[in-house]
Image: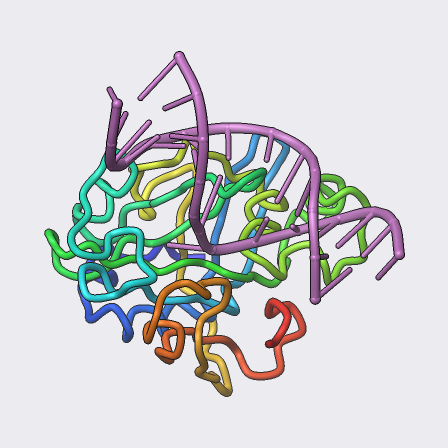
Length: 194
DNA sequence: GCGCAGATCCGCT
DNA sequence: GCGGATCTGCGCG
């Protein structure tokens, strides 16, 4: 599968979010190749988005990478889990796209082990779950999505994309209702509906 | 140095 | 439905 071109990330954040669906995340893990197809994402629109870590241009050690060039990897810890984002938008505007779910494609045995022998549907249907299944950790903070060992490749065209409000941001005022969540319609690996 | 909150997950009720 | 797990970094003092 062909590595994505760096110019792919230079497009409006909401466009990029939709186009990430159907692409593949590849991790050349030391146990073997781990691959997932992106089936659900959420866009975070930087300074104007109350739900974003970078709301009001809040610039800290943690959010710093969001101000960088699009195509960088933004990871952070949420309680016991690692979550992973694609930095988006023009450099200097702290936008990001959260990968919320993928469909297991390759390295199924390893994913099964990482996910503690749970049923396959539960391996990658959530942002904290997919990082565990793919063996992704904080070591990739600030790296590029276009370089090994963790990268995005060209993918497949999806027949239908759905749109709706984001999940898990209850304290964010009006931003709660923004339709910034995109997923492949009827894909069984999308995180649970609300 | 301390207290707190959080883009989550899982097990128990 | 609810709460605990358990990590990072912020903000205040």
